[in-house]
Image (tube, rainbow over all chains, first blue to last red; front, top):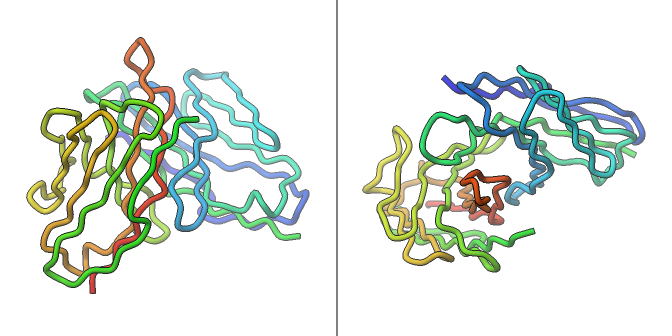
Length: 112
Length: 119
């Protein structure tokens, strides 16, 4: 069964304190792995797509990496505005549609 | 990026009534749209895949007679929650894919979500 597990469930950081969020996945063939940011009461906002092990992508203070079993979202010197829930999702090759299987997310709180 | 507009952003309805939620792709055509449901502090769960001009494909455990999906045009999909009950209260989110020439979605764009409360 295709599955995505994110850890930690919640993370509290001081402003400037770098850390990493983990996304472990079990999938019958990975078509793509996605990272999204979700603010309370809003829909997810796209951050990155990774396709193959070894791939890395960066955007401002965020950097996403991918291995064959997991992905990491590194947050460097976070600011309070980075506080949000970060969602990881995968699209497997199985099935006829490009549907996303989401993890439960990591709730990040960055305090001044 | 592409814009997906969802309406309404919140709705309160009485138990037993029906509620329609609209999802529009504003600046691109979406042959496929997806409907998700999200409970507090939980992840998005795919309910159904909406295909323009054909019947929706529902995920296991989702009642197709309760959650009616219509994808009448390349820019509009609707989700109607029929005979709503308090347990249907949730956050409903739609998404639309940008499909490349190879048929693979490089990213999905999400609407802002609809908070449904059934009283």
